[in-house]
Image 1 (cartoon, rainbow, N blue to C red):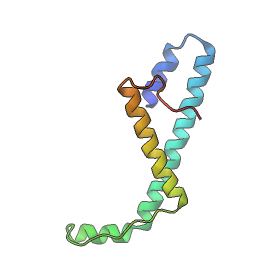
Image 2: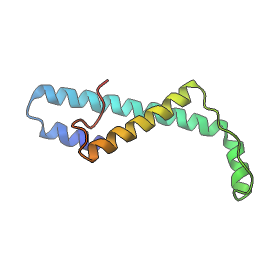
Image 3: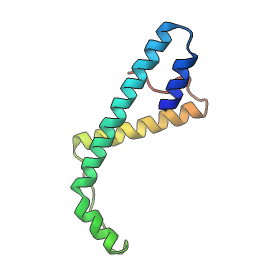
Length: 100
């Protein structure tokens, strides 16, 4: 997605489009960082359980994962980004990212 935004910035002829795409790129980078941090936090909280399942070769049922509010929001954001990007790639949307 960052490459797509870079291409749109390079191709933009209107300075306002350049500003808008730069803002989108910055916002997208921050959102990806936020999602990554929260998902890593979730995985870290369940590290011992995941290690147990891996050591058992998948023969042991793992725990029910219960994300906290920020982790759940990050998961929803990741899904929303994925769905939006997929729609853009298929030509179903004109914008590569949702406007916030």
